[in-house]
Image (cartoon, rainbow, N blue to C red; front, side, top):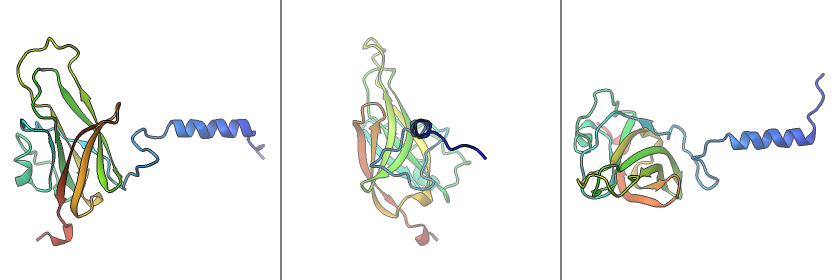
Length: 170
């Protein structure tokens, strides 16, 4: 028979487990089952205005990315793209990290990477990133979507998308 853990060890193990929990989930946000973002190898279109867009079929995705891969199963996945808009120099980048529901909003955690110096090439760039999300984890109807910086928690961009009802599909 194993002796019971001393209280100090039990507390230490509990704290260690909490410290290992995913950083993208906060006490005020809950992750819906299957909501995790997954990488997709696409090149987002250049858009001069910041915004968020989602595609639930290949035809709509063709307006968001340069080429739509045949590997995307739009019956089970949705393509979400976040656009920062025009930036004056090279070196800007956006990386989508995770997604959660919080207060009725699809919250995308992203990292906006700025150039290290202001001396970059003076050529407009259009940073953006796209990812796949489980379509079944999204509620049908109008959905507020916001991208927030993972380090500062500042809003990067927000918008509203219409999620089609999968039961209404032909």
